[in-house]
Length: 322
Image (cartoon, rainbow, N blue to C red):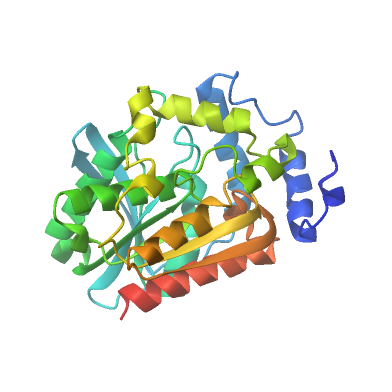
């Protein structure tokens, strides 16, 4: 199955996007488990630059630095309009906790801000392996506290703040929401936007077995490397802020969940939705057929990526904009 177009059930536009990525990386994607991490990060940003072209225009963007518990935290605010106090969604990028940043997810944030009418704030949290769990959660809390305390200066409504992310960012969102709940502050967040996260299922679920091949981009070997880079010790694997399916989810804010069908992590999404529903948390989930983990970046050519960002933006607007 070296030619993605021969993969049974794959969306034809997804297959063509995979071929385009090969064109962008003529020497092949670096093996994240072996290559120097800085080289992996540079290559990732270089490839994502192509997919970030032609993002929606914002009324304005603003780059600031927020004092955090581990040092300054760069944050980019996206304002789709000048409509007074806007709702805000704090966004955390994917990248296995080890790469990615504000530039790699610029178009994703622009797209959903424009669609929703909600201001987005993309958080450039510290990465593993230099910074381990729960450092990104510490920084997420710091950015949330700053946003609430500085709402007037930022032009946002402190009572209408949500949080979201894709992949690693979805994990950070869930972990932060659970941290707030443990502190008796679950109502600080009004919404969660969760795309193709790992919420605690192991490697023996059906989607993990079915899509383990490297052509799908997220083999067990790669996933285990990401996790081992992020956690400091074995006990972290069972921490409910990382293993969300083991947590008491009652009292969390409403959530929109999106997943890619051809993703080893896919089964995590219906599993989390089921547990949220059982805990009385309003939520909805969509599995987008024929696409792979990370497909949100591919809006230039993949209609289902556009559909997913529209769905996420609509959910954010309907919940935070109400």
